[in-house]
Structures are given as C-alpha cells and as structure tokens.
Length: 320
Image (cartoon, rainbow, N blue to C red; front, side, top):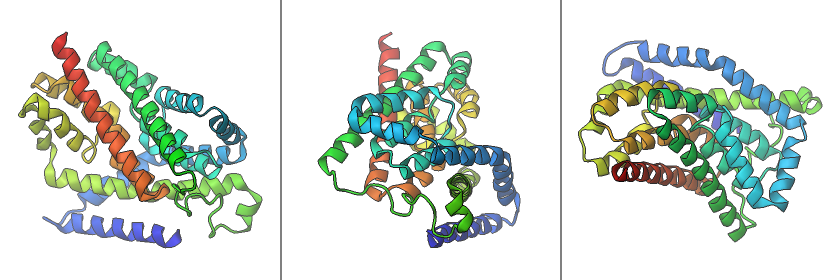
C-alpha cells in the first residue's frame, strides 16, 4: 500500500513537471493544481472525519446486516440516499471505502457511488433554475435508476461468484500497516488519517490529469458538441464529460450556453451524468479500492447509464 501510494505521488509529480515545461515553460499548471487542492482541503478534512466516525459507529454494521437479510431493500436505500444526499464524487468514494472496510458488501457501494455525485437537493434547485424543472427532475430520476441498476447488477454478480474477492486487499484493511500504536488505540484517528491520505493522493493525481487535458485541448473542444448530429452528440458528450469534467454547479451555466448554441437536452444530460458518475475524481479513487473486474463494471455501468439517459431524454423531448 505504501509503495502504491508513493508511485502515485511520483507519477503526479512527473506529470506536473512535464506539464510545466511543455509546450512552454510555465508554472501555471502546477499552481492551478495546488490552488485547487488548497480550496478542496476543508472538504478533504470533512470527508476524512466522516470516515473516522463511520469506523467507530454502528451504522456500517446495521447497513451490512440489512443488505445481507434484505438485499433489494438495502440497494434501494443506498441508491435513494445517494441521490438525495449532498455528497460529491470526491467525498462519496472515501466514505464508501470506510464502509467497505467495515464489511458493507460491494453492491451497496456501487449503488451509492454511481448515484450520489449526480445530483442532490441543491443541485436539483439550481438545475431547475438554470435549465428547467423537467430537466432537473429527469436528472434526479436518472441518478436514482442508475444507482438501483448498478446495485442490482453488482448483487447478481456477487451471487454468481460468491467466493470472489472484489475489493483490493489493501483497501479492505481497517488499519494500514504503517499506522502505529496510536492507530491501535484509536480506530477513529486511524481511519481519519488513512482516508485523508487516500483522498489527497488520488485527488492530486486526478486534478493533474484534468489540468493537462484542459491545457492541451482547451475549452474549444466543447464547441464540438454543437456541431455534430444529435444521435452522435450524446456519446460525444459522454466522452468529453468525464475527462474534461467541470464540477456540476459550474457545468450548468456552460451547458445553458451550449444548449443556446444548439446542444441537445440529451447531450447535456449525458454530459452531467458522465462527468459526475465516472469523472476522473471518482474513477481514480474507485480504482484504488476495487479489483479491475469491478472497476470495469463501474465504468461500463456509468457509460451505458449516461448514454441511455441522454438518448431517452432526446426521444422524449422530440416526441413532446
């Protein structure tokens, strides 16, 4: 675990170095990543403290028992909670990591981390004001359905292969090996420090990749969305929405402008879902927790869910 974490930091530093000297020497990229991390630091601390609380609370144990005895009700509950709680992609995966370390099955995790970043009550109101109420309600329904579908598919996979280990061994450890006596005496601080290190490491990595993509492709790439046939606009929006993700609240004004330029509502829907559910922020953290098979399932579910939501939205708008 320590070696993997060091590799991520070295790779992040190498990318920052290359991005700062090519194609021209400038510290703007490194400074932008550093400022983003500083801005997000309070959120990282909050998420770490919440993970520590989960480690010592009885919530995880109750949740695990509910899923084992009433799996479909628990998956529905996980998808519903993920849809209505204001937990962004950065926060959802570390919280799920804490639950996984307490033994909560992977099906509930999948339902939560695919539905939770897409919308919440604040996002619902803002989406309604900037785009429209029908669009906001459709986004809420899409998030809920994506979470339920993801949980159901993962639960079926787990029943098909009940002996398989889907979570990485190092991610399932309640207390990292490098934690010492204080960790043994205080599960709260052990989990808090572990989660803080996890989020900081992978968030720096994701922010660096995003900054490199933006620097070399530029915001002009968004104009491509308005210059393609409506059928292809949805998959293009999915392809752009993840790597070039803009935080949901900031993406809404951008999408409003693109829709005024001809972007279809379905492409806007696909962009929001893909950018939230399978964004770089979430994807790199999910990769650190689960084995490749589950990570692949996570990506497929997120991509297919965004595509279906986008195409269905365009069909409904066209028929209406």
